[in-house]
Every structure is written in structure tokens, then in C-alpha cells.
Amino acid sequence: MQQVTIIGMGLIGGSIGLGLRRWAAANKAGNQPALEVTGFDTDLEQQQYAQKLKAIDRGAWDLAKAVSDADMKETFEAITPHLRQGTTVTDVGSTKAEVLKWANEIFPAGIDFVGGHPMAGKTQSIEGADADLFQGATWCVSPSVTASDEAVRNVLGMIAALGAESFFVDPVEHDGFVAGVSHLPFVISTALMRTVSQNPSWRDMKTLTAGGFRDV
Image (tube, rainbow, N blue to C red; front, side, top):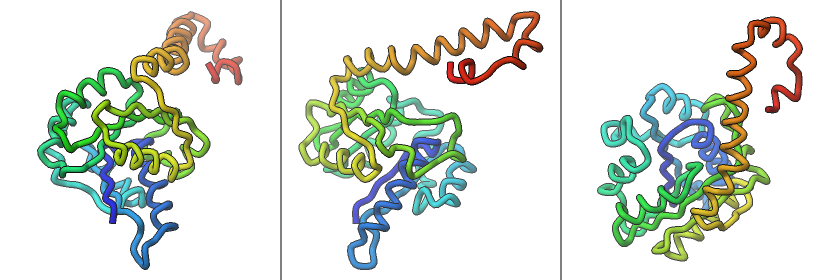
């Protein structure tokens, strides 16, 4: 049975878990699901909620000290001693160039990294996890130069199981593209909200906000 471990049980991690567990149940080998999903989050209540939601088969309690309060680079460093040869590692971060650089520096030979970024989401956290979140979405794929063909196929298989469409992209190009179509809109929306909410007439003005304001 294949093993999948998800570190971070927020909206994206929870939705991946739900989608993979649904796929695994539909692709049983005999009476066994096709894969088992383990989940970890530094917030124990969130991890427990993910298990209650059935986004994971079980929680990984022993990772708490290893990755507590760690960023992506530190998480890579923390998990490396525990990875078996032949393990495929991927991520769902919104930038790729620096993440690929860290992966190439930290992971030893035999641990394959394939960068990923699903272009899907909504405002909620684990409470909004949805097995259909990635249906029809574009999932950017940026493999490490040392990643094996098998590792790339593993990630492509996961993406297909979640109903998304793979899109291979150079990590530097990815970061430029996403800065324009994803990050810049967040900056603009924040600037809009800060500007209008500081207006003395905001209390009256906000009663007139409608779809256009909400979308921005």
C-alpha cells in the first residue's frame, strides 16, 4: 500500500487528504484502499479535526517537535532524516524558485522533490476542506533537476486523482506569472480595503458595497 503524509492540515492539506482518500476507496486492491493518508499539523486541534473530517487515516503525533513553528526550509531539514530512499516529496507553496533551491540543497540523493502549486482555494481553513476543491484546477509542476521519472509520475498521479490538470512550468517563470495573477490582486485588494475603511464616511459607505467590491 502506498503511503502519503501531508504536513499542514489547512484548507489545501485537508482537501488533498479528502480527495486522495476518496480516490483510494474507489481504487481498492482487494479489500485494501490503494493508499493510506497520514496527516500532521502543529495545531493539535486542527489535526484532530482533520481526522474527524476523515481527511486523513491517522495523525502523525511524533512530528510535533520536529517541525513546530518551522518554515518550509526548516521543515525540509526536519523531515530529511526520517525519509526512506525512494520517497517523493512535493509541496503546495505559492512560490517555487527558492523552494526548489532549498530542496536541491537539503534532500540527499534518493529523495526526489517535485515542486507543486495548485491554483485553487477559498477563504476557509480546514473547516472548508473539500474533496472537489481541485476539480478542473491548474496544478503547476516544477520538478527538481534531479527528480526521477518515477517521482514525477507519482505527483502527476496524485494530481490526476484529485481531478486537477498538470501544468509544467519553470520555477522562475512560475513565480513571475503567479506574482501578476495571484499575489498582485491580494495586494490591490488590501490597499483598497485600507483606503476606504479609513474614510470618515466608511460606516455609511460600506452599506453600498456589492459584488464588485467583494470580488476585488
